[in-house]
Figure 1 (cartoon, one colour):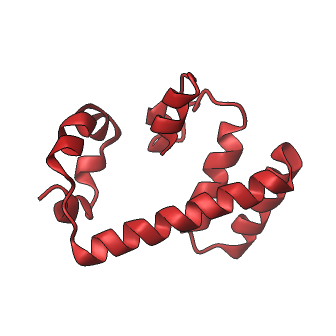
Figure 2: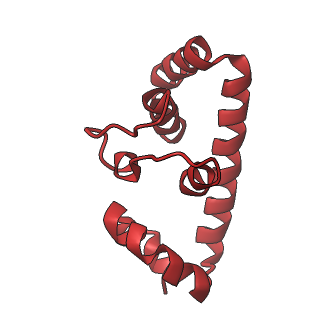
Length: 116
């Protein structure tokens, strides 16, 4: 989603920062958004509360609502697809090969469900 959104808005982002937090996402408030995303999938309520507060402080309450909606929707779709074992369409597999390899997505345990 980030890759497509950045492309549509003609923004250059460092997608490697998605899987390597030592790198800069090169997106305004990128570190705040990544911290929020990490906290959303984690189990540390204090970290989630801290990430929410930081997101509101830096970007406003509306941004928190938007980020939470995106995270929730992504989690729902991803969980459903993994549970069902929906394979990715061949067109998308080809179009995503370069960044899947670069980001290590092919090595994720759930990749066996999606990549076939």
